Image 1 (cartoon, rainbow, N blue to C red):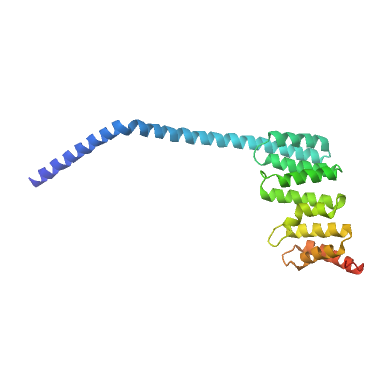
Image 2 (image 1 turned 90 degrees about the horizontal axis):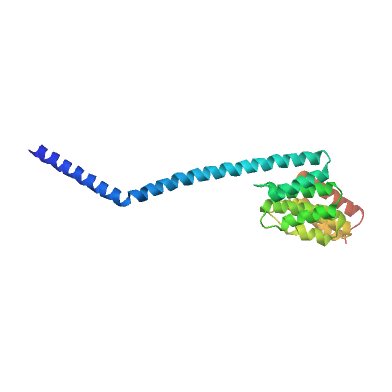
Length: 223
């Protein structure tokens, strides 16, 4: 008898649960279906967007490689035209890479002033990743050593010539060379000594700095 009672209770509970489920489905079923559809559509849309984005980036990459080939072949004007198109219409990281390469090609053509200005503009563009901005400013500084004064070089890279900055060694070397070119041997010595005394300075950079210090000492340049 007890078993029959238990069986009856289970059947009643199952019926109740069934009725509750049906009631809940009538109330919330459409919303559940709508959410499921949105999830499916959203996932499909995201996958489609990723494919579209990757396809466009791949096409930009092919165009970038073609532009590099033109530059390597010495077809600088054609390379610059191709790079300008990528800068305007490219996708992913290729527009900023095109800007950097275009400045390099401009320098190769012999227009150091225009190239330095292009690199400097990239260095000031806050939409560009910081590491690329720093490299661009460094490139500008090295070009400016030969065509501008110490202050122009300093404006580009002195902020990077600080302890902890990954580009401090090159920045200090550029500042030292700019000071040396300007005849300010005291300032040049200061920057070259910072390079030599930094135990993390690359050997080739430290060796060049030491050579410059030896030249300054040999010439009696302390002021």
